[in-house]
Amino acid sequence: MITIALSKGRIFDETLPMLEAAGVRPAENPETSRKLILSTNRDDVRLVIVRASDTPTYVQYGAAEIGIAGKDVLLEHGGEGLYQPLDLGIAKCRLMVAVRKGFDYRKAIQQGARLRVATKYMYTAREHFAAKGVHVDLIKLYGSMELAPLVGLADAIVDLVSTGGTLKANNLEAVEEIRAISSRLIVNQAALKLKGDVVQPLLDAFSAAVSRG
Ligand code: PRT
Ligand code: MG
Image (cartoon, rainbow, N blue to C red; front, side):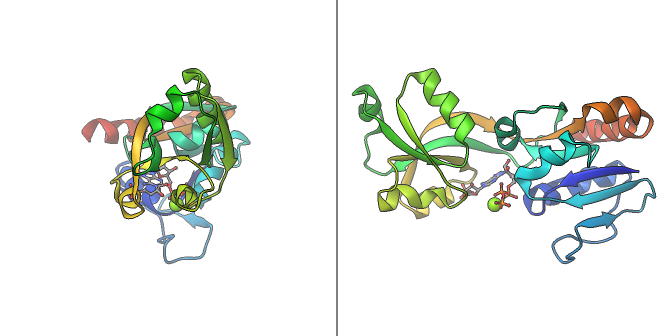
């Protein structure tokens, strides 16, 4: 049995056509089902529905042989025990620094001010500002980062931006791009060796689906 871990929402939606191309059709829609383990048309493949940020953990420990996770999540996880053989080019967005409109970010960092930055991406944010030599106090949040600068919790946030609609609606603006993000296929390193006969054809099918676009 091969278990594929993925999260509901945008990753599931954009993965479905690739699963289809790999000959895997889930028996149920996770958005309407409450089941966390979904069987598929294939006896030897099942899906497990996990929190987006938990996907690498399931694959790292071999509870799932394969997973699909955002690069943002993989950077925070560290990638231990995982292969990341394929950029699926889905769930694309950008990891950005954003501030309240009117806050002079360049001036603040030029003056060497200590910035307060709210984020759920503690590791990536720390690396980014350290590389720039900007002094920051990081404040860990689990969601709704956009609120922090509006209520004086932070000067800036590090968060994902796709359309920019959320920043705009909250009177914020992006001032720096940290990196482009997309979702990656991840594979448990041991599983590729031990179950390669089933895992490798699935990887090849995903790879072909990506090339077709
Ligand atoms: O929701 P939950 O807390 O369980 O986890 P999650 O938010 O990490 O999961 P989910 O399913 O929302 O996102 C899964 C993955 O999709 C992320 O890890 C990213 O790799 C990718 N992705 C792509 C995004 C976005 N685009 C995105 N826009 N994840 C989140 N957002 C959020 C962003 O954080 C911000 O709050 O959408 C808002 C901004 O969107 P725009 O369109 O207004 O700019
Ligand atoms: Mg979300």
